[in-house]
Length: 239
Image 1 (cartoon, rainbow, N blue to C red):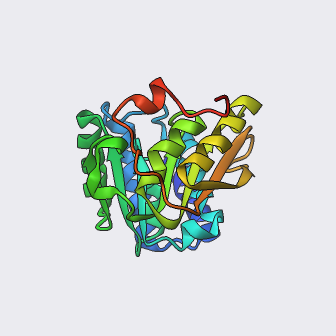
Image 2 (cartoon, rainbow, N blue to C red; image 1 turned 135 degrees about the vertical axis):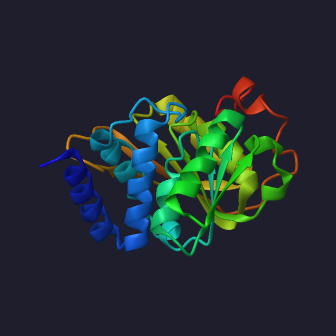
């Protein structure tokens, strides 16, 4: 079996699992091809035989969360190489997906990926999460994959979420200190921890978790803080 056939077969399996249409399959195949060839893609996992699992399957695992499947407006914070935002845009053609990325060079790649994939429902915004007033309070779902510690991710996402909106953060193993700080930050930001969902997006995947938060109250007016403060002085359970 050729590499192209292996990738095609795996894509078909994911499409069946997540009820993805033919346009979505073609879009993801095109992105995998671009990522393999374009040196500006912000990832070290370029080979489609590995990227289909490490990027696509891992990204699509969020569709097991009902609020993600039902979302109308999604923001992918710190999008980098475009995962999970590109995968969710391909799988959810009725949703509007914004790839929010601070680095202009990454944004140029993301725009190329959207173009080659024909994803009319996706767009790129070149901004930091703390410096995007147009995004405040307007998203059903915010995603962040391997972006930062949980308190930082919560602080980036909370202002961008509409009431009742959901944050999904992709993480590996999370220590108790980070988990406790994440819960404390969430409470301060108007979020509540809903679940930690263990996932196995591909055979042999270890310590893959989705940390799910819901916006149950308004985010205090002092947020977002100025750029950089979330990482320099992260919210913590330790007062």
